Image (cartoon, rainbow, N blue to C red; front, side, top):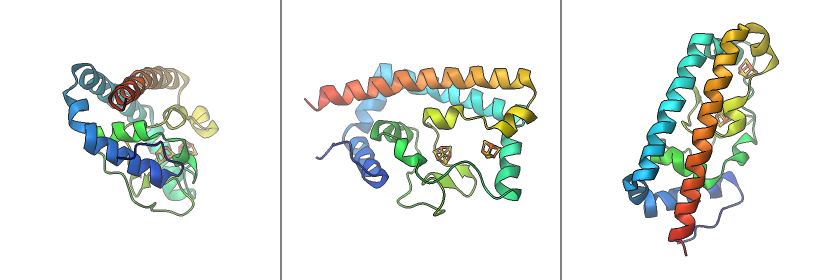
Length: 169
Ligand code: SF4
Ligand code: SF4
């Protein structure tokens, strides 16, 4: 099987799919990786709950629906690695074969981002409108939760890369 990294997002999605087919079950059974997956899932849940509580989700929804669109522009999907897409497959996310909107990121769906494990830029982005709208103490809490999510993601991403490197020898 061809596990080269891939250049385009479609190629990376294909590589992630092949990695999942070949090693998805083993990855889920690996005690270290399954523990990290659970931790990341909890971290993502904590930061998305804080997004809701702080009002970020509401402001972004208004921006999407009433002000002509979000910041999820075309091209951001290219930042995703096959391993990060593989983490989404391990979480049960279905990766899209094509985009919904020509001027937006491949992963933007009708109801927002379809991914569970997102790239650092996507986790960490707080536009100037959000910085002006959300109370500073909530922003701080959100930044802390986002920071924890990014740390967990980094550790898992590296573990999975190491796992694949070792298996592919
Ligand atoms: S982050 Fe800012 S620009 Fe992006 S959708 Fe939310 S409010 Fe709009
Ligand atoms: S949050 Fe999701 S839809 Fe938005 S740019 Fe990031 S990956 Fe794309």
